[in-house]
Image 1 (tube, one colour):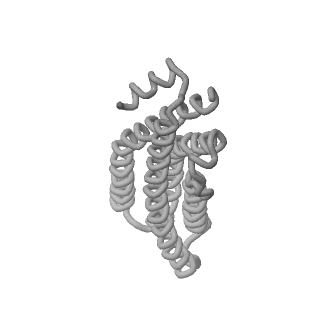
Image 2 (cartoon, helix red, strand yellow):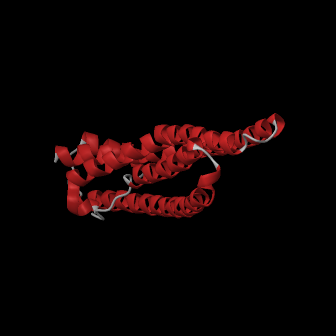
Image 3 (cartoon, helix red, strand yellow):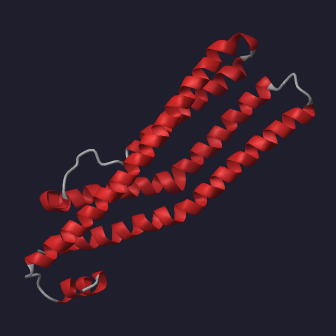
Length: 200
C-alpha cells in the first residue's frame, strides 16, 4: 500500500490498525532523522568555513588596519558579523531536542513543522539577503584597498568578484528547488499525520 492509498484509507474509515499507524510514524521519524543529519553536516561545514574565514579576516584587519581607512575596517567587521548572524539563523533550523515522533505526538509534529518553515525561509529568503549584503561588504573592501590602483584594475577586480558571486548564487538556486521540494514533501506528510492524530 502506497502513501496515497494509506491516506485515502485514513480519511474513509476509522483507524483500527495500530500496526499501520506505527509504521507511518516510524517512516516519518526516519525521514526527519535523515533530514536533520543532512542539515547538521551542512551547518557544520558552513560553520567551520565561516570560522576559518573569520580567522583570516581578523589577521588581515590587525595586519593592515594602519594602512587603510574606515571603509576597510567596516567592511571586514560587517563581513564577520554577517557570517555570525547567518550561522545563527541556519542553526535555528536544527532540531536540538532529539525527540521522537512516537513519544512527542502532535506537539512534536508542530515543532517539526516550525523547523521546516524556518528552513524554507533560510533557503528562499535569508540566504539571498546574506549574499547581497556580503557582496556590498566585499565591494566596500575592494574599493578601499584598490583605491591607489588604476581604474582598469579596480573595475576588473570588482567585475571578476561579482561574477564569481553570481555563479555561486546560480549554483545555489539550482540546488534550492530540490531542497524545497524535499521540505514540501515532509510538510505534507507531517500535516497529514497531524490530522490523523487529532482525529483520534
